[in-house]
Length: 376
Ligand SMILES: [Zn+2]
Image (cartoon, rainbow, N blue to C red; front, side, top):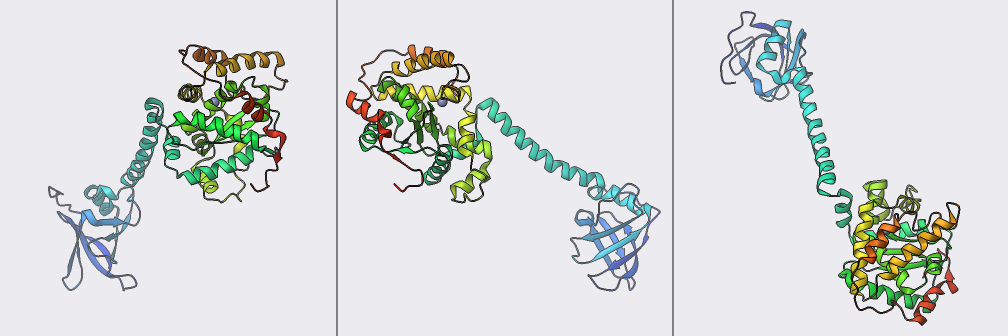
């Protein structure tokens, strides 16, 4: 209060003062002073409660006929004042106590929340900042691996993992060769499943699911290497982690990562991830990584290009009902544009992704399989 309000002839008003909870109330008078309300009690004692520290039991409405006040100046004490005149005059001197002030306080909180959300949305759209990705980046590796295990087992339910030793050795060779360009950030683990569907998915924690169907349809090790490199690109960019956090929320994701999978809420997380697919820009990012990984490994990108072209043609011939439905290419359109990007790559010295023998071993990795719940 900087200026003293004019004296109001309606005061002092009658009031009832209680010194502490349970104490007997005392009758007195109250008036509105320059810096606070002045309470005069029998015996000549005067209490001054400054306007800034007054609290009203409920916001003082325009048509209030009484007020019940407490004060930070005298904790525990309370003051009851009857009379519309006092209530109205108090509202003027301590506007904080009005309904509108209470409404504004609440509004202000909502304003901040909305501003925060609007800021996030703007950041997402204008700057390409992805909150789910930055969350994913800060997850410990062991958590992402656990999320990867849960996603992989959900995704591959009912299919056996292929574990023929010679085939696995060839797969390790290929994975290591492709990982050279991945700057060692993520240790990749590729798992092949006996599954005629032609597909490959990246799941969290650098894990990749590859189907026997995809290996069968690949005509060269370079083709399989191209698809693998693309999926590794998704892994490097943490696309699976981000998609899961976006899809089911951080809470449910954390539950899986912390080992609480009994909730069942994420039983279909793998299916969800497989069905969702990624945005165009995420696919471009993965392709960009794929080309870099192939180049660092001295593997020609032509395999990836051939694969796009050939399988697109196959899909068109099979139609919607054909074996291609739900395949890698359902979540990876449009192949033509991507084949063009690959074909624009400058030539560089390259050698086959695998020797003929290792490639044959990889193609027959499903000679030996293991049930999902069988220990390693
Ligand atoms: Zn992709």
